Length: 419
Ligand SMILES: [Zn+2]
Image 1 (spheres, rainbow, N blue to C red):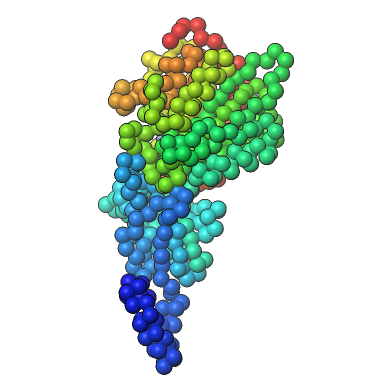
Image 2 (cartoon, rainbow, N blue to C red):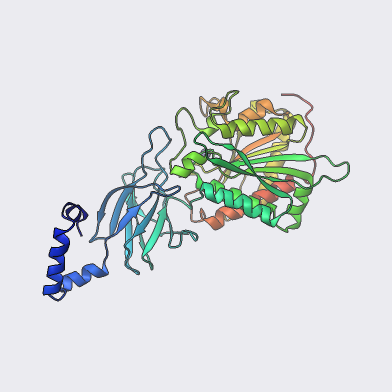
């Protein structure tokens, strides 16, 4: 029904339609219309995003772009709820605009819990069309597997329920007053043992939902009964923040390059975002206690980056001993991150040639402020491969945990050369 006409004539049109129905048996085309209810799209839920440009009810085709959010970063993330599907029919989704919003495969779910890739879409000129038979009356489509602030809260809650050493805490409230869930995993230190400290953060860029799934894989491994997870818990305090930019993750904005800058360009002496300020405060405490050894930041890279790699501060920022430790960590990563998203040794450096705001990237803040032997790196997990799924991300997260455990099998060297 044309809802505009119905709204203008709520009573008159209804009576008129009723009269037609009573007077005549349903025409064949009316019966067909009943079997093909109108497709509708909405995104007014946590993490939702999708500005509908048009729906062709005959072709069962939906055209959309990410919902624009002024000054809230790249418009690349989209996540919509489609209703009015006739079970078994194929739904077409034509999405724009540009390389960041158009992964080769979209994610689809009929229960909002289990996410699968569509077949590769067909596209040109910055748009892509995905087609997917849906055996349900409703479905959710998204740029990637969603991971929302409520998922972060559930992750830390479930981790604590599973492992007595794990304690959820609120890192802080965001600028918009949302809780920033975090997890502390710490077992009582053994007699005379030195306590190591590890910080893992994800989603300084809100659209990079895959990085939170990697984080989840790491957390679920860390609190599991795996012997190597237990060994790491015994020697290290691990703090995990599954989503740093909860505000943009909550409203479905991209976050990257938001105004005045994004979370991973906020690591100055005067941070704008409470999550960055709180992380700095906690990290300084650990470091001052001599209990901070590793910082890992989790990201998703550019669309053509199809293998995992690490970003680290440029060579000049490292003492020789730190650079040697990094090589040892990378060897551990090669040994453990074996695929299908395998780490084959790629390393990229950030510095003045990478970004004029390089000094306020978290890794550089760590290098400047923590003790010289502290290792700092960012794992970039590809989002545009057939393995960029919940399963693929969870697996690389678990493997990252194993790499960390392997790295700490020999104690980190103390620095001898200074920064
Ligand atoms: Zn990022």
